[in-house]
Image (cartoon, rainbow, N blue to C red; front, side):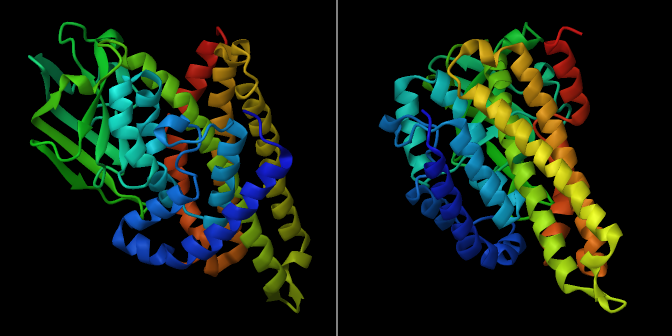
Length: 385
């Protein structure tokens, strides 16, 4: 599906107005609470944004990557909170494996309620003993009749405290210690034997993040996503979409830092003149702008290939582009956050400014979805190096 420029512009305008009226005034309250109200999920669902990219028969709306990344960028720019974006849209990493590989019955049971904002979906892969090395995960799911019995732990799970559905990577073949022993299993949030602990973080304060423990959790076998042993491939595919979305978010946060720094520079006066009139400040702003525009151009190019419909456009070289784009975008965000705080000076160190929040949140962007180092290694392998 390809939207027109006018349709994308209308979406951007609507999202910007929504962020200013329905998000920004409440951010401090939500950060203090450590989570988002479920009413916000329902409100965003009414706008149709939770369902972008999902099948119509499941309550979604087919949408291009151009539309999805436009929404992510604009809400990030005008909302200014990575925690909000991670939590509000955690279903976009929790549902895709089900949407692509789950049975029709599983899709019908799980997806519609989430897209209506009535339920929350999360993804559980990372474990206390390992992060990006997915093939080494230790959480097990052994088959007993018509059920799987799950034992193990997951950590750093976004929306983990509130999730009604947890799409978890589990080891179903104890003999295979590598990637082929991994499967994907949907675990209901009210399952007996599931316990959750809230984690405190440097940033993303309005996103509930949890450590999950599975102690003999029994899950109906029909909640298996696809076939046993196919989980690792699902995870790799899922990462591509997550990283592309993170690049769009990083672009939006970089723009927010630039917007706030420029506004402050025009208002703040030192030695009888606005600080924007000092060459050193203008040059800082232009360094920010350079990184923003290079990220935008690269993102648009990668998104265009994703939406082309040509499978050849999404091969190994495209995956490498996604990895390197994710690094470039998050590093641009890191630079812009640092420069904005410096331009704001003491005010940039105070809670309440967007750049202070983004400064605290930038590190998780360079870690989540694959660290900078892993992205470089994966890209080099995709390019045959």
